[in-house]
Image 1 (cartoon, rainbow, N blue to C red):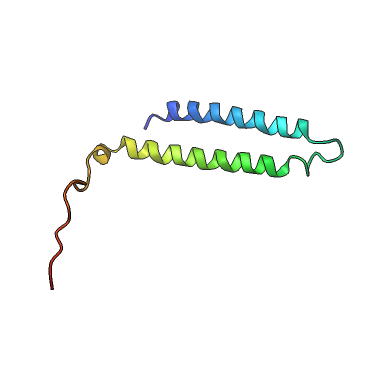
Image 2 (cartoon, rainbow, N blue to C red; image 1 turned 135 degrees about the vertical axis):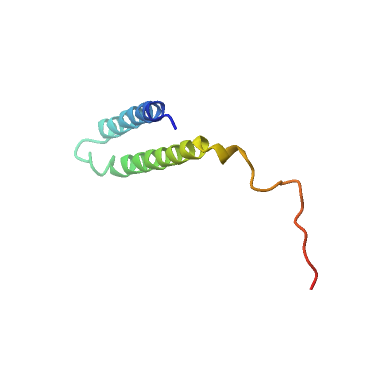
Length: 83
């Protein structure tokens, strides 16, 4: 796993999410900044959290030498034993 590459990708994603958050507050009606933006920002950052976690775990999986090897052949049907 190349941490610097991964961090750069996540940093770009974070910058995009921050732009969405700023826009949500800027576009909220006067006197309703919190009510008009809170849930949108919450959802945006939850997606960011899930995306980052998924990317970190996937990078770890991809870095494993055994990741490219299958544990079983998907074309072979398992043999069932009769009782």
